[in-house]
Image 1 (cartoon, rainbow, N blue to C red):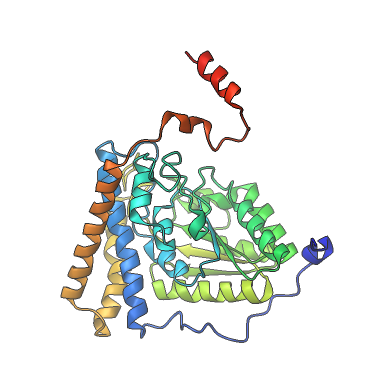
Image 2: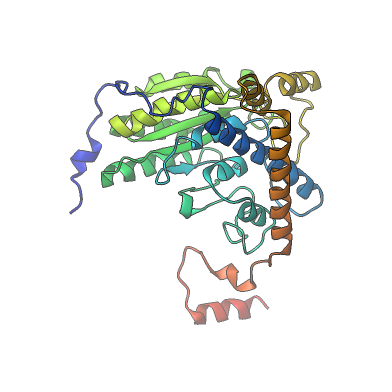
Length: 364
C-alpha cells in the first residue's frame, strides 16, 4: 500500500542535532587504517586525473573533460562515511567522486575513451558517469539542473521509509540558479534526507566569486530555507569527514537536509580547454595554493608525524597506484567502440524493428 501523501509532505520539526556521535571518530587522526584508506583514495584520484590530462592531450578523450585535481579530500572524506545503499548525484567534474564511490579505474577510463566497456557503455563520456551498482546517479552536464534530482532521491527515500541519504555535489556558480533555491526549499519543507554539497573552488568557470555573487559565504543560503549549513576547509580531509558525519547523522535520524560549503582549490583550469591560470587567476596565487593547500600533502604530513607512514610506504603506494591507472589506460585502449546499433538503445521512445529499418533507410 502506498504511503499517505500527508505523511510525506508534513512540515519538519525544528532542527536538532543527534545525541549520539558517529561510531568512527571522523575528525580523529589516530586511526591508521582509515588514514591509509583515505590517502590511497586521494592518491588514486590524483594519478588518474593526471593520466586523463595526458590522454586528452593525445586525443584519446573527446569532448569536455573537467579534472578534480586539488579537490580530492571532499570525495574521499564524504564517500568514506557512506553506506553501500546511499546515493550520490553530481555535476560534470565527476571522475574523482566516481572513483571514491567505488567505480573501478578501468570502467571510468573506458568511458572517457568512449568504449563499450565503459560504465555508461561509451555513450556518456567524461560528464556522464553512471553506475547503478554503487548508486552513483551521474554525472550531469547542465549547471544546476541536477540539484532537484538530489531532492527527488531524498523524497523517494522518505516515501519508501528508508534511512539512506543522498549527497548532491555541485559548484558554487550553481547557487545562482533557480533550481538550487527551489530544491533546497522543498527539501527543508518536506524534511528530506538530502545533503547538498557546494564544491566552492572560487572561480566558477572563470569568474571569481567576488565578481559574481552578492553573498560570498554561500553556505549562508541555508538560513533562508531553515536548514543547517556549514563552511568547511575542504583541503583538510578530517574537517571534511567531521562535517559530513554530522550531516549524515542528521539526515538518517531526523530526515533533515544540510547545505555544506566545501571551500576548496582546483589546481587545474575549469576544463582541459583552458589553462590552470591566466586572465582570471594569477600564476602566483595558483603556486601558493598548490604549495600550501594540497590535501594529499597535508594528510601525508599528518600520517608521517603520527608514525603511520614512511617515505618508503608512500612510494610503494604511489607506484602501485600508477600501475593500476596504467592498467586502466591499457584496458580502455584495447576495448571496442560501441556497436552502431547502440545508437538506438537507451533512448526515450520505444521503437519497433520496422521503425529502425525505416530510420536506417532514410539516413542513406
